[in-house]
Image (cartoon, rainbow, N blue to C red; front, side):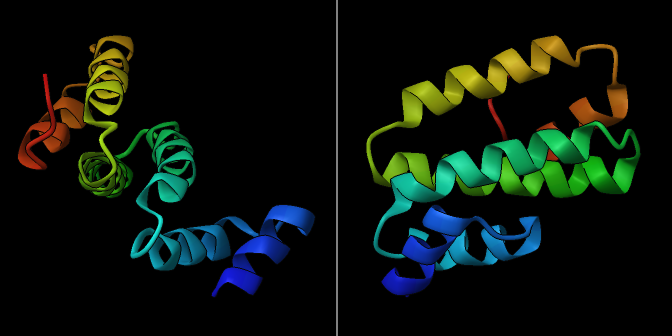
Length: 104
């Protein structure tokens, strides 16, 4: 796993592979997954449909759990509340973030 992570860091990889690697890496290095999960969620939000919002909320919830594991929960809380403010005019997104139990 470490070799795959290092190879991706050095040479890059596709977005779906990054998510797979981040989820595997999070088992032992939760902080490393957060910078992969959050931008993936933001890309989904830009798709502007409920199913994308739902998946974005799942990714943000996953990032929040990893942040709690490594003591970065306050920073992640702030990022999520900032994201909510930025996307306040999107009620479907707000609904999915609420359903995921994310901070307001």
